[in-house]
Length: 330
Length: 286
Image 1 (cartoon, helix red, strand yellow):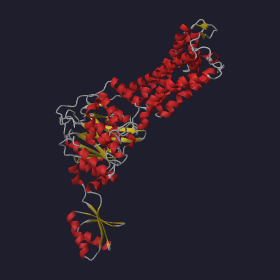
Image 2: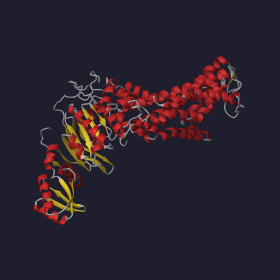
Image 3: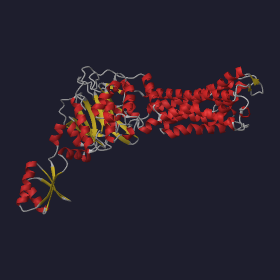
Image 4: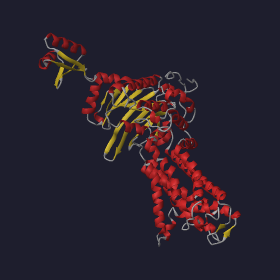
């Protein structure tokens, strides 16, 4: 660990938003990839952009990095826009879009050294530190073509940290990782966020965003259908759903209704939604009624259920989006 | 993973933006790390040695310019090699790096890796263009030096027969041979620009490398057709033959000047189109 190496150049807060996108639209022929969206990310926050595949998350991030140009709207990063400041708007910004890519015939360290040459300053002196942060020190001399997907993701984070970013942009960082890789990546992002770094994270996994992010924008078909804090989102979410299977589902359904719980008969039993204590009491009712309980499992989490409700049923129209933002952070 | 919370600074991140020289160093370092580019440089030295040695043991090819003289004058051999090389070898050598240097980033999906680092497309374009041009000139210089040196050592420094039948003394022959090879600089740069254009627009390294060679061959066929004198002048292959004027009893340089102008026009047009395309394209995929 080299104390002279400044990897995390953060803790500098001001009223300037880390990201301020207004009326952003991008079309490809007849396809509207991003439709008049607005996203504001305050400095120091961990912000999630959530949506199913094809929602426009990556298109938005590409516009943020200047890889593609918006048709209309403005996008500022720390008060700088591509239109006025060009590539200087990327000062203090780092990250990767989709899966990070490197030169496969070169080692991880050699790739980082090349990128440090592009970053200038003391970036080259930070290579050991960033490799340590992402846990790739032992494999730094291996060629990237021999890296697993998870190792490439971590090398992507390392290459981003070389820039001493104030804003770290990660596009589906856990995508394609095994469960252990997902756990490690989430822990890494959380640790980075704890240093005060602003993190903008895209994902299609509500659980991931729930664990990592403070605030979230949910997109569907290029439009924003919801934005607000995770805490506010939890208040909107339905009760936890359970799946119950028994030897007499019809009778069990009657008992469920009698408890005042919401119940739907599905192929493999009953889908029951309601407060956890009422579900616990229902289980006792079923057993007391002499019905054998064959299975009791939790369905998607409440936030996942809300996510599916928003992205599968909400109209893809920004005006129709639900805004439960407290307004405090804007 | 112990460093995460270790270092926090209290000042805003300085505006870090590398100059074009830094981007050029990055591109050169990347090229130097490729085994293929090192092999090309080594090949540019070794292959001419092998060619000179092989032709020294064969019957002279009398149907090629200076072919009948390759056993009688060491100065004739590099001219014979030059006449042979311009048919497809020089366009190929010009395209091997230039046709790949942009498309390679598409192939690896690394455009977004580069362009998310405060580097402008203009900087990357010029770094890659200068690297490709510099590399191709280095290959041409090595090829010429190796061919001339080996020829003089193996065959000798006899007088060079001129294209008007005169005999050129050894002392004058060497500068003329070097000047003849130097006339290839302009069309090689023209083919470099053509390969860059194809590399940028097709995003396919194979097309970027192969298409300039095929186009060069088509230009030679078109150039050999009768009644197309005006069209022949603007072909990129024509400047490869302008050195003939240096070796006559009364040298003429107008074709060389025309060749330089034609090559420069190809270079400017191809690089302009490539630059505009790269500036405007959306970086997607990968």
